Image (cartoon, rainbow, N blue to C red; front, top):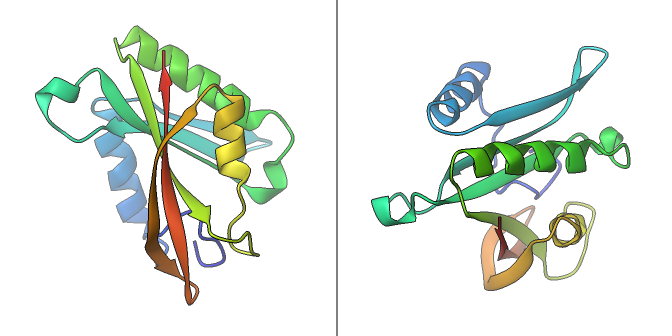
Length: 147
């Protein structure tokens, strides 16, 4: 988080805060982790979309991979497993909120958008200059996949 705009958080959450987030997620949704030789390479999770009962068949998804894990198939494996678990829960719509650079830079590229498109998501919305990090503005896009 300190050297990327993939997350618009400024500060790295404490270990206790991260554990709390995981526990809260797992009350209702999957939280999947991929490890290699005991080292976490990435994780994917789902969380409520909007938070009203009418949206209970939709969720927001998130995936993070270590930069060194790129190209090993972990992202696809995590998202396929996440989609399978969500489908089994009766979820029909997956949404992803993605930081999108106005111009690609050292902090943010369009890799996440490209990955989601490759996984079957389509872009359904864009917010302009709504995220500010590293003394620059970033857009945010929403992508959707009907499962």
